[in-house]
Amino acid sequence: MSSSWEQLFFQILLLVVFCRHINTKTPGPTPPPLVSINSPLPTDIRSVVLKGESHTESVELLNPVNLTLECTWTGNQNKLPNITGFWRKDGDEVENSRLTVQLENDQYNLKRVFSIISEENLGNYSCMFESEAKIDFVLAAPHMHEVRDKPIVSYVGDSVVIVCKMEETKPKPSTWNWYKANGTDKEQIFTAAEPLRYEIKNDERKTKLVVYNLTEADGGLYYCGAVYAINTTMGLVELKVINFTEPLKPFIAITVEVIVLVVAIMFYERYQSKKNYTAGKGMNDQTNTLTQGENNEPEEGSSMRQRKV
Image 1 (cartoon, rainbow, N blue to C red):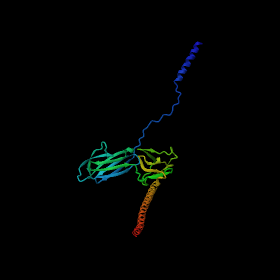
Image 2 (cartoon, rainbow, N blue to C red; image 1 turned 90 degrees about the vertical axis):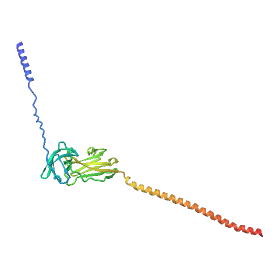
Image 3 (cartoon, one colour; image 1 turned 180 degrees about the vertical axis):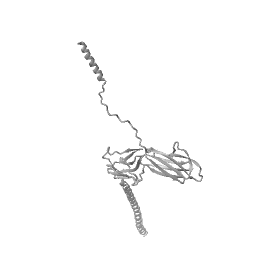
Image 4 (spheres, rainbow, N blue to C red; image 1 turned 60 degrees about the vertical axis):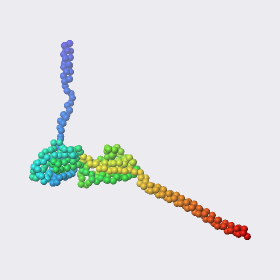
């Protein structure tokens, strides 16, 4: 009997050990391997032939690009067999860009590829042929030429519409953003945060910022930003918010000056009248005195005649 119990206990123990090694978890899907996909940048070429000493070429970019800049200089009277050429970025020499340029077909050729990925890569690129000649390539996002040069004037409590737009010949921006100057910084305006104060209306090449219930604190500089993949082009508009009494200040000042002038004239005329009255009264007193003296003389003469008799 005891042996049967021992055998049963041994079988149960083996079963427990066997079950512990069974994996009851359902295997999940195998995660895909992480693959780094680096799509190559598009390429573009800009070439300039220089026949003088300098030239500036404007290059508008919308997207990141591998940009090849080619410079061809026809040379000067010397026509040296070779010269030193190099590149500059915003006035600073590009590292490892110096090389010897051979005279081929009566001209010098200098070429280099630049990866323009972000705003930091934009700027002024210059190919230098020693100190004899240079070509400047100014790389930038499309410029906003239609910028208001005079401030917009509105009144406290009113609403104002500020407009920015790109020229029809310029590419359409992907979107527009608005900013307000805060000292040396720019604070982006989010209409969702203050829907009762701001409203932004974007329409391809045009954007409008509506500011409601103006206060004097709303005055200042506003920036509209046309967003492109390579950079954001900024436009500047100034807003002045004044009280309704502000336009009346010149009129009030003129009115006060007129009143002061009239009062001064009235005082002067009154003073002159009083002075003339005093002078006239003095003349009358002298005349009366003389008249009385003349009247007394005959009386004295008659009395003298009576005494003689």
